[in-house]
Image (cartoon, rainbow over all chains, first blue to last red):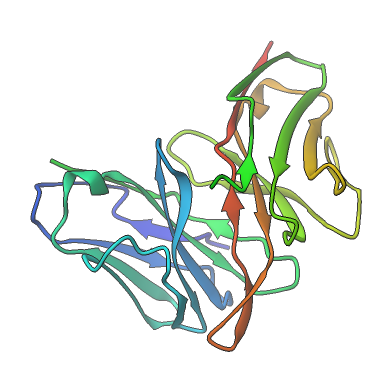
Length: 114
Length: 118
């Protein structure tokens, strides 16, 4: 069974450009999470979806960041315009939503904004 | 405000010996705790979890201990193997209610780099 799939694995872009990160959660999982990992702040939650609906976006840093989940098998995280301080590894995770609460992570997208 | 802390940035252990990774938390509302392992260029991988109603959970070589009064948990790996060399993250969660949905929001520690020498 495939795990969480993220694309691209690496993205290098210039400041001001739009960046779109993609995620396919594990089939059957009804919760999806976007995280960002930096040296300074560690792993921090950006946004959480339940049954394709955004529930908690309090971690989204600013209006330049947006996330969508048009269906149960696909989600995007968009940064427009991108800035050098957005450089980080972005992880997508999904969870079956059971009482055990484990989240299963994708391999991440390493974003570099020049 | 660091609600979950892993005070040891790194730990070095000989193969076959015990590895003990520690984690402290400050939020008494946390009721479920998890350990993740992360290799370079990969996402975190779930290892083991424990509910606050227990004080120990064991899975093969991995055991997690929870001391609620001290707000402290630890992960024991016995025996340690070179393949265990990775970054280990402690995470804690509590139930949040948002948008009519209850969910567990993970708060992660900064991680501990474990190196197991052959």
